[in-house]
Length: 110
Length: 114
Image 1 (cartoon, chains in turn yellow, orange):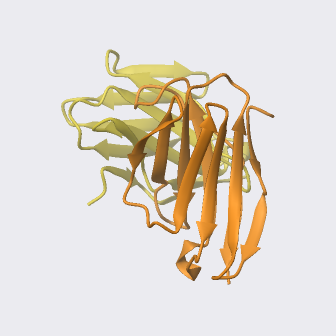
Image 2 (cartoon, chains in turn blue, green; image 1 turned 90 degrees about the vertical axis):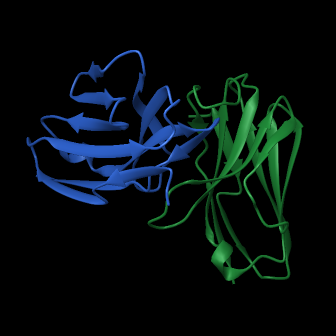
């Protein structure tokens, strides 16, 4: 099975709505959880990350929440805009290496 | 953006060819990575180098051979590849190897094996 599971694989929202992407991980020692955005034909780029000593982090319209007990973390995008359309990847440590989720293709319809 | 560069950006090769992918980072990092990105699959970690030493080989077939001559350069030598090796190959770097450092990705090399 996968070390990091990500859901949903595709997500379509109307401009202005919120989008939520969830990931679960298996290594209970994990302490760093980044989210990457990959626009079509471009490289993945870090958009937000959270460390295990906090439960939530916000940066303007994006936020990440972490539940260490349940071993899951989520990306929240509010007031979505067409330029938010991309593939989003979560990642979590797995016994020393960073493992990535399979990605969520987010489409924001104008 | 010139933090992590990769060449070539596109490569088409036959199964009997030998080619190399190049990655260079200008961020002063000490760790470099090769990933394979296939459609609808997670990013697959292939190799990790920390201070020029290979610290991870994620069960990659021997037809992929990495080389790290210094902390700024990373190569992936390819020979006798299979069509299923067609994918986007991404290079990344971070300050140090490990799972608590942000990774910076290159633009990737789109490889097609015919």
